[in-house]
Length: 299
Image (cartoon, rainbow, N blue to C red):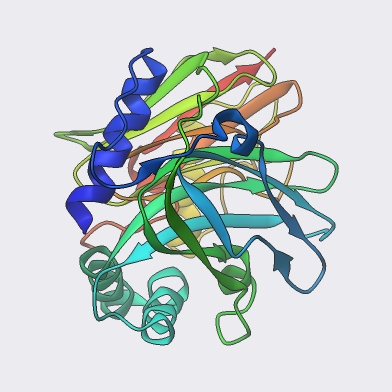
């Protein structure tokens, strides 16, 4: 199952290069074609989000809107055979909001039991989209924000069936690429220093582990070093030398397995932003505190 899902991610990358080869025997091509290539609407309220129960297989673009002042961090994932959704949600709670070794171990179990396929965060008044390739089967859409806000509370999660009908749709054409790579100093982003407002971004995780691309607005003169020093201080219980962020709500893309990719349109307003990872390494250190951060401008 994982092989098929990851092959589908390769199809997404190939599509952005202008080459589409649909799985030959996996799903029947739909005669309706582009009639089913519209946006898949995910609408978030103050309590939960609504989403369709099923979509055709193939390249799907999800449009995410929210009326919640706290925003939504919408993710897409698929579970390995035999993994129960309630057990997996328990793991996610610990992986996102646990402490110490338990949090690190829960993260390892999440990686072993699922395929995380990214997603996108949205804030009120700024709809965002993400594009992913789906093969037939059961997926889940989740609001990771629920876990971050209240690890012991209810979590918005809804199953999504990708049917046996394959519809060959074209993805948004990326105008920029962000790569997550592994280096001797740890995971790093390869990203442009400026992005056009509204431009689709191809995000490719080549780091060898689960990663994310959280985007937060920062002050006009903030550097990546400022943000690294901020998290080093906070994580050590010390007052930070400065406050780099000018907004609290995250945008960007939540967790995705490696080596997978997604296309996001985070709908950022013009300004200066940081892309960073709040995840923990094997020693329990936040990646942003050890250099997994870049700063860029939206123009």
